[in-house]
Image (cartoon, rainbow, N blue to C red):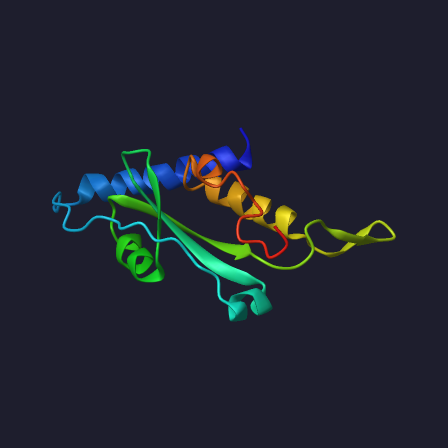
Length: 137
């Protein structure tokens, strides 16, 4: 069994135990879609943080803002993930003598998506473009 599958199973068991022991089955709020708009300062800093939420028992994934991320992260009814999304820099890895000296935007964002997929199944389909918001795109 792979480490990622073991991680996912452990996560799902923890989530199930939270849901099973919860007395509060009333959903009091629902996520509102947020679409980030990077600023010139964001591009100068090279990264933005993106936040996503998914109902524990449902497939749709919604991009949300930081406030909602904080709110839904404490709910056993939702799964949340955040990604450190690179928006400026070289498209591909910069390599010198066989060593990566600077990670490229596409490579970095693909790794973020793959890591998030361990927690939130389907995020790869939600984020098909690893170059979204990239300054050179």
